[in-house]
Length: 316
Ligand SMILES: O=C(O)CCC(=O)C(=O)O
Ligand SMILES: [Fe+2]
Image (tube, rainbow, N blue to C red; front, side):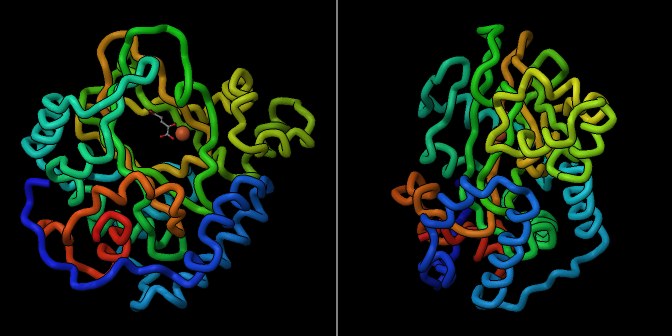
């Protein structure tokens, strides 16, 4: 980070549920496929976090917060006005362009955790007070930032692979991701594609019925990552399929339990930053950040209990 740091003065917070069940819950999360059961477990976990996080939880929020949380809940995606200026956004892009701390995996160039953690302005984006509050309202508990990443999607192969194939993320009983484009992203530049409301079992059921398909297939549509159904997604969900194009700086929060993918870029590469917020920390997941943890909270970010809590796996 280019910003000065302040001493946080607190040891990383571990909730009771994490210290007792952290890794175990990660595995259970992968095994529980029924969306209603997942939500009930999510509710219980949220309750336990609220009881043990150590600060007063505000689940009301202001109007903007409420609108963001509501869109996330109903549509599964919400645009978020990123707090970075165009100049700051360009500084982030230039920082990544000039870093070689990245590895190529097929047509994707991934920056290392160390490189991402040193990028300018990113913590201010990922801990924006409105954003964190909206995610808190949405999750029902203060969010924990468990992953921050950045990568280029290169237009070098026409073959979709990995995240370019429709799938659900099964990251936690409740979670969401922030996406921030660092390059202009038109229809040929690999935009993110989200299937609105596909996280919602009632909506999935209504789409199945409308498509004249057997409602019993709902079960299959919620079976894990759902990758095997990728060829059928656009047939079932037609009008819900939404390509998110936009200029550099376009930012949105998404419940990636809904079906989504990245389109294969055919014109220019796409540079993206992403952050994952979940209910609890899974040591297995945040391990890659351990060696690179910041010495203190960056001074440029809001020093609120909510920000401190969200950053607890990223700060020593
Ligand atoms: O690159 C994208 O637009 C999609 C990535 C993805 O599937 C994810 O972040 O879960
Ligand atoms: Fe995904």
